[in-house]
Amino acid sequence: MLGTSAALCWGVGDVAIALLARRAPSVTVAIVVQGASVVMLVAWRLLGPGALTIACAVGWLDSAGFLLFNRGAEIGQAAITSAAAAAYPLLPIACGLLLLHECLRAYQAVGVAGVLAGMTLLAL
Image (tube, rainbow, N blue to C red; front, side, top):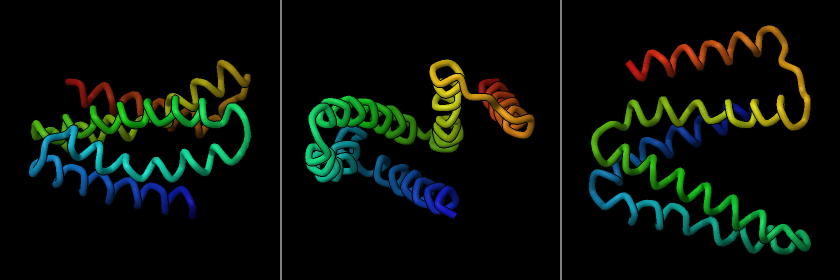
C-alpha cells in the first residue's frame, strides 16, 4: 500500500513538474519544488550528529535529479524522462547486492531484467 501510494505521489508529481516546466525555467521549478526540503533538513538535524551531513548530500543529489528531470520535461521529453527516471530503484538494488550482500529472489531478478529491457528499448 505504501509503495502504491508513493508511486501515485511521484506520478502526480512528475506530471505537475512537466506542466510547470513548460511554463517556467527548469531551475525555477526545481527551486520551488525543493524548497520543502528545508523542513526535512531541520527534522534530520534533530536526529543527531552526522544526520545533517547525510541530509545535505541527499538534498544535493535529489536537487540534481530534479534539475535533470525538469530539463527533460522542459525540452518536451517528459514521457521518456519519466520512464527513465522510474528505473531509479535499480540503484538501491545494486547497492543492496554489492554493499549489503543481499540476494534477489527469482521474481525480483525477472523484474530487474524487465526494467533493463525496457530501458534498452527506450534508448532505441
